[in-house]
Image (cartoon, chains in turn cyan, purple):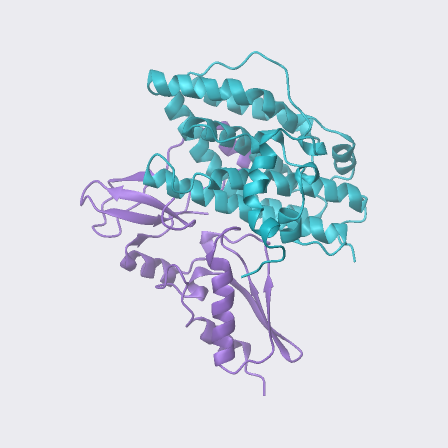
Length: 258
Length: 169
């Protein structure tokens, strides 16, 4: 049996929920790759905790997606038994970690967006979406305090750290635009009052990141170009490699449990 | 014969939090409801953090405890809303935390909107966290995260001891 609200078609709702769940899952997995490799112990613990929160949020979104789809797939099937083209995460989430600075820059760009999105989703006409957003919003706001703080400290740090943060920003900036481009899925959800139109989040996000970059002494890239494709399953080469590791156990030993 | 829900609450007050055993699950504020649904006892639990690995252990501990008390038909339900907050930590629980060496959450002056928080990034004042050992307010944050998702790492600049702060959530 399918669940969900009565106002949005279940296939549309399913697609939108995958965007939420997959972005949290893929970013969470990327961050978890740092476990045991961070520059200092405190950061290792912090990164692992951020990853845990994100994977916890992914579970909530993907469980709901499975219920809406109504084909008996749960969070585990959706996480481990799909291939690259089935994933709906933003391209930014799957970008490789690079150095510590690049990981934090990626985190900051997404955290700032997620905080605005989740705050708007707390007012969703879909009760379950509103509940998940209220829970996740508190966690993401805490992540944002940290990622913004480190972007500022590393940007306004040594010449070496500043150069690395500027390079991270220049590399990642063209991937940020995708989060603010709506399509027919977003239109349907926004018409039904389930989610905000992605474009509507841009001005506040832009203002917040520019404020942080100014404090970090970083130059805002001047390009308007934005990569796209993640939300429709056209991913960068990196996602396949990530999935090969994340899904290894289920690929090698189908149905394995513990 | 069915035991009263008051008795069940007393039993649950004997179940320690798996990561901070000085707190009971009742002190932690994660037990939302206890009620009978016909012959089945329904315990509603709320997660502290979505990815906290202790969540499944907490459910297992609740089940083990209630089964050992003779409850046969048991159902655990998860409830997300309203989301768990450290406001639900009991006063008794806060005192137990301090004695255990963990500084309890300091209530922030007012709950701020997420976008309000976004606008003041990099200019935060921060709360004053007292050292649980010597009581000094001369402390500094070492890291936003500590040994579990619910804690941050601090250091006292008076007695020089490191300590965990149960962060406000």
